[in-house]
Image 1 (cartoon, rainbow, N blue to C red):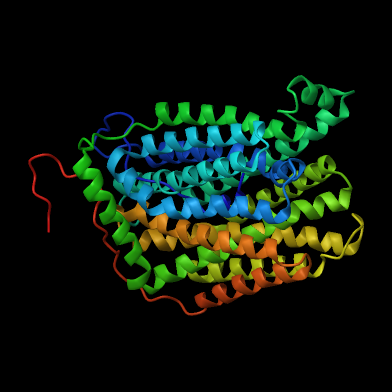
Image 2 (cartoon, rainbow, N blue to C red):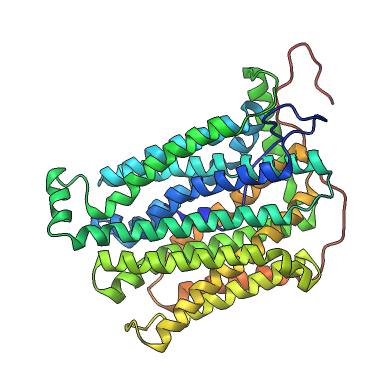
Length: 469
């Protein structure tokens, strides 16, 4: 239900042969890319279906804006608390198991959103979704990167595959928001269909909750695909000793990442800025859309259309990411340019908050600003992750991605709470724009080249062996 989840910030892990390769090099890059794209699409599609109606559904259930901001904070804080432990867990029990578990947790969360109206149930659903977000933030992307490295070497091009994964994520979110926003509106068009649905279920299911329930069904499809299409190489059996000893080592290594490498610090700060931008957009835009249209259902449709356009802009930005790096002559400058575009978009959204007419020039400027936010995030994401993967070796790739997601979620939680507490108007938007611009300026100076940062493996120690020291 949380698109910050989604910044068009890709994520996942380890080489996965589907069948014995002639030279033992596992899946070829094109096959790995197709599976990575499919997993990315299926995971984010149900999340997109709930984005358009999430805030409006909670409002219809009687929740105020401050309470809704609290729900989103539960999601972000839970994801932040679980990021590093689950990043190490994927090294212990396997990527496929972790991804399938994330799908099952999301399925439960969407069911709670669709059927429950109590604050405790929504809070539980947000916590489960936060756990799922943490579980999913490392295994697929790191799997793709390691598969490409195993087949073509460490100097293989990564930006194209990461960009395609980001585009698939954005396309899923775009299609999902369009479906999620259109379903309640379509149910309202039929003669009494929405009322019949509400009466037949005793108020348990309302038109605004249908997208969440449909999203739960899609999550089941995601789990089945992960279990059938992502085979993994044999790994040592997971033991209690391995889990207890391996995961904390990965956590400690992850916490040291930002302290010992300037480039990684910039990557983490960039993820934090993306979290601030997405928190403002996700919390404040649905209410503006509903106020503009006059009803929750019409507002959901407008926001769905707007979010769809935004995610398409993100997909376009991801596709343009390699070209942006070539045009600016480095991934660092491409991240700087993307951050500047995001800050400009947030500024346009801030200075147009007083517009009340859907045909006003200010509204057109706000729509443009919304698109620029996602375009800039799309350009910055693959280039940021390209820099990260070239600095971190395969032993700690899932952990590094978890640390990156941790930074995004922590700042998103704080920024969402701040935006919910501040008075409605330009201030929340302009504060987020200032944060994004300040972080983008850190990339003015190009980082010095350095060797890959090794991290201790979180895999369990095979029985009878002696851990290296």
